Length: 369
Image (tube, rainbow, N blue to C red; front, side, top):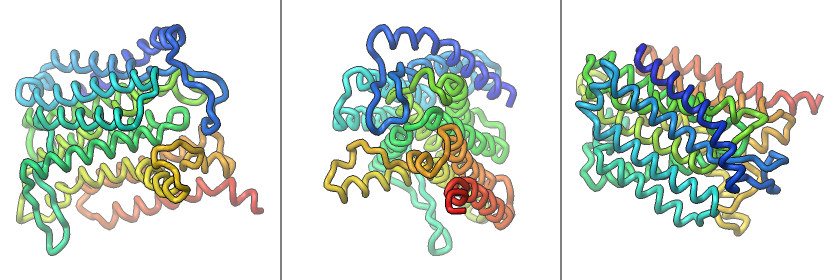
């Protein structure tokens, strides 16, 4: 735990320090976010924050390579960590080009599917899938099925993080919550199944991602001094996909224990919980734009975070509310692997969601009064 915490803090520090020169570089070479009708910022803001996050991530991995325990993750399961790093670097490169030249959606989609292919080549792939129906069935996926699910999972996650990046600190905060939730789940695997170095890689990927997000937030929380751009949002998405997919492959199926079945489903629960806000946002945006006769990729100002602003929340409060929703769902899902009484977890999560709903509706209720 000390080593995971060390690399998280070190990655956060390197990311934080690297962003000041990156901000100067972005201003000098035209990597600026213009003011558009759908945006909430009123001045041009430099982007390329994803490059600083990648630098912090690389530094944290180099440190982990030299540590006593986490260094064994490179010896026993180095392919997964290297695959996640290469996929992330690929999408940062695509994102940098998009931040400068506004690439079309097809080009970005090709980059995303290629990044998913890199994960598959390095062994990060779904191999089993548990269905809770009919008393519980464990599906063993063929190579083609696992590959298809991995590509779909990765592309959806990358685009969901990209869609939600609309307010200062929003994508970085959700990325941080997602990384900490998936990392906590991965550490629970180590606790449940023994201190096997082959279990280290998903928690390691989550820890370095969490550090990069933590280091980026002080520069990006309202009022933002730099944006992460597509390079940052796609980096978060692909690393969350890598950590979750890697964790799913570490769970041995124990047929005589329903609790282990539930544990095997936990990565999917974490995925749904972490993505609740951005995926709902993405689905609503696609339906809304399609009904209006527009391309589903056309931008507008009707995202969930825009709606929170419309009913009276400030930018900071809207972002903190979405943090609350995502945190309650994500860590509620992870708690199912630690607490055997699922009813207690469900009641706690329900209470947390009720508080979040009431807090979200406060400005509208005040206006009606």
